[in-house]
Length: 96
Image (cartoon, rainbow, N blue to C red; front, top):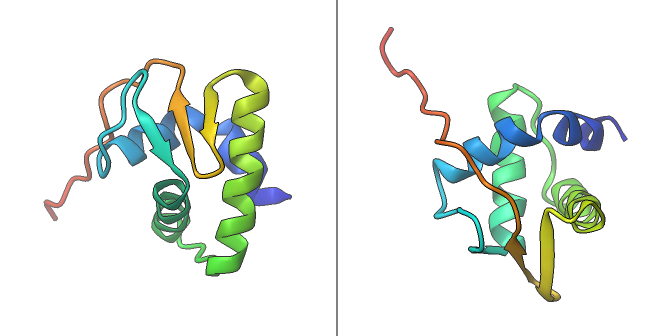
């Protein structure tokens, strides 16, 4: 899946983007819906809108990848613990 590969190869950028909207840091909780909505926003910023159901599937696949990699630790079916350091968030430049 192309979008999954985009997330995998841009993991640092994605999590900096996510950190700009959600409280995200080492050992913090990450919730499925936060991941889902961040994925939708992330691809909208790339001018590649995806449906809710596609984002749900993509979130599940990306989370599974991160769990296998050891970057997330599963707490229950809808939450994980962040197991890596996240740098400062990406801040959009709103000046024209």
